[in-house]
Amino acid sequence: MEHATETRAEDLWSALAGRLRETLTDTMLETWFGQAHPRSFDGTRLVVEVPNEFTRDWIAGHFGDLVSEAANATAPGLSVSFTIGDRVRPQPAAERASAPEPLEPKAQPVPRESSDVELNPKYTFDLFVIGSSNRFAHAAALAVAEAPAQAYNPLFIYGGTGLGKTHLLQAIGHYVRQHSRRLTTRYVTSETFMNEFIDAVRDRGARIEGFKRRYRNYDLLLVDDIQFIEGKERIQEEFFHTFNSLYEGGAQIIISSDRSPREIATLEERLRSRFEWGLLTDIQAPDLETRIAILRKRVETEGLAVDDPEVLTFIAGRVSANIRELEGALTRVVAFSSLTDRPLTVDLAEDVLRDVYPQGDAAPEVTITRIQEAVSQRFNVTIDELVSPRRSQAVAYPRQVAMYLSRELTDASLPMIGREFGGRDHTTVIHAKDKIMRLIREDRSVYNLVQELTARIKQAR
Image 1 (cartoon, rainbow, N blue to C red):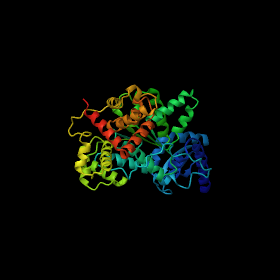
Image 2: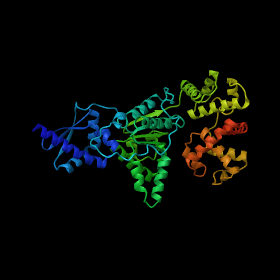
Image 3: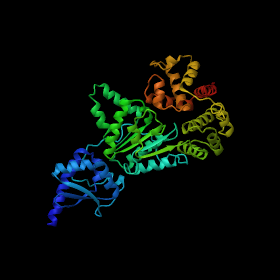
């Protein structure tokens, strides 16, 4: 009789699991139900064992209604309860994701691309320099990467431009792709999310269902610069539904912003409350010790020849705004030393940075408009030409210089810079920045040009 009861319990659970499989993705199913095992059936109630209290509570909180519906569809009046059992052992998320035993034998799922946006190979946890200003954010990001949807969900990282938010988001993506290959990830900027949604809607709605399925079927969604959806009601509504679908399905959501949710003025309250469900952590500007460590890591990673450690200390003491400007200052000093064949000393660094990064707080705020004015004057082109669609070399090169300086000297994001230059895509800004950086290293005249413009912009009143 006991054997018959166990067989009945297994049959019911097998049928119920099949119904869950029709709604949940394979990864979600295996992550939360992969170690579930039917314990008993008393005629109306099926008791199912799970490995730990966390899994039991997560199923109750996120899949309770779904399980009840599946149970009633399997056998009218059937109820299901979950208990902690000793026949299954807890497993870390990465191990569960690659567990060889699914609920029932089934056809292998069609492989999905982990991410259709290539992650920056430099943005890994190994290359992230930890200091007092970012220690907690780093620990939270690593915890999420090691146990997606179990540690903190959502994870919301905020802080000023150039402090490492994008680095941490992409480090999570790298880690999950390396250690949990069956978990699918997507890293996007909010600008990309908005553009893809707008394109889907413009196509008379024909592509909107595909857009929804694509964004709501990832195991991890990493969204950078979420602040740019403020004031955009239709975008916020779509992201609200995307967030709900992913969260209720057991997916991990990681978001970055230049402000905390409460400081994003026109963010809908329902989105603000969801962003605050999980863990909020900020990143502050790095202190002197951390800035020195960042420069040392950069020198080590790129194999730069900086024999005098005092050079790095000097640069770290002169540049404190953000990591991007800090690394840009190092690039300038090393490039000048290489181009002039002068030894890399503190005196050289002081000469190079004197006008670009003056001491004290007297330097005026740099704006994209001021940069456009300076570049227009230098190249004898109008600002209208600078932001126009024209691609002739006489306009394209000054535009690339202005984009590079906008990225180096302001806190503006890539999408924001693109908008200020005629509504261009952020990838155009990246291309311009990379091209000018390469020319600075290779051509003394370009180096001098950038130095001259930077000094002029920073000294302007």
